[in-house]
Image 1 (cartoon, helix red, strand yellow):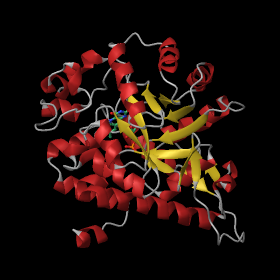
Image 2 (spheres, protein in one colour; image 1 turned 45 degrees about the vertical axis):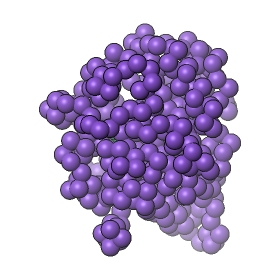
Image 3 (tube, rainbow, N blue to C red; image 1 turned 60 degrees about the vertical axis):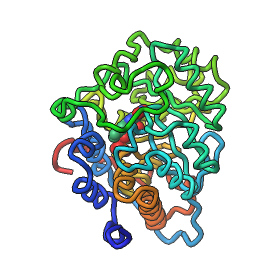
Length: 367
Ligand SMILES: Cc1cc2nc3c(=O)[nH]c(=O)nc-3n(C[C@H](O)[C@H](O)[C@H](O)COP(=O)(O)O)c2cc1C
């Protein structure tokens, strides 16, 4: 395995390896986006439409990549987005991912639809910074109980995904017809009276979703926990203002990796407006979607993100070689980001400023 991994030098290599080693169901589930997958592709293309303007001759010998997210130190500004079903990529599932994040000294958001129990993940990686992701479901007592469990297990933040009141339409998953194959289970949800069959099928579990959600429900979440609240899925200034108004602690500019509303803005294109909208408040802004290279991270930070999160790259690493695979993916992104900083004339994250990036007014295949 070590030899095979040595030949994988970038995130796209890991994706190609995962494509040939995962079942078709698993690869399609992890890789797909909604409908025509326009946003899925645009998340990546939009980074390519931005060009870098490096500054030279600045003594970059002593670089510091570390930062904080909501007061917690991470050794570089790339953390892990919540993604469901890690056991479909590797039997060690979220436990392997969390251990890799912890050994790289970065953070991980654990999806409430994980295939290991949130408590077991916490015990397996006691040092690592972990936030817990959930949706506000119809059954508020279930949501509150999940939050209490996450608090007790030592999670340091609650990520509330607010962009998925219904499930996006993913053609390849409809073609597969069946949901998550046995023996994987949504371990966190099993104790609330659902059958695994119910939870495995996206259409059946859609009944958990609450289509009545409004900003008042964020006030409710704030009232039931003292942990910081991170709102995931914001793409506009209007919603960013609302996040500030409702006292969220942070925002993740995200379109769910292009899996929900096809045709929405690429996240890197949405970022400047959100950053501008929250200027003057204490709220932190992060981004996920389409990050595949160190230069993508540099561009996101230049346009105002405090840190970025990655979804699929981690799943490709996990599918390739469990904990070691995730670690290598994080290492590649970290090293590429370090090189990008040095070649742009930056020693610290503070020196990564908007004037490092030029936006080209091209929206076509001519990248
Ligand atoms: C297979 C898969 C499962 C996901 N599951 C969740 C989830 O359970 N909760 C959530 O908030 N976001 C989920 N997401 C969205 C990710 O958190 C993230 O927004 C997205 O993957 C970022 O884009 P990237 O994959 O291009 O890095 C999922 C994404 C993928 C690819």
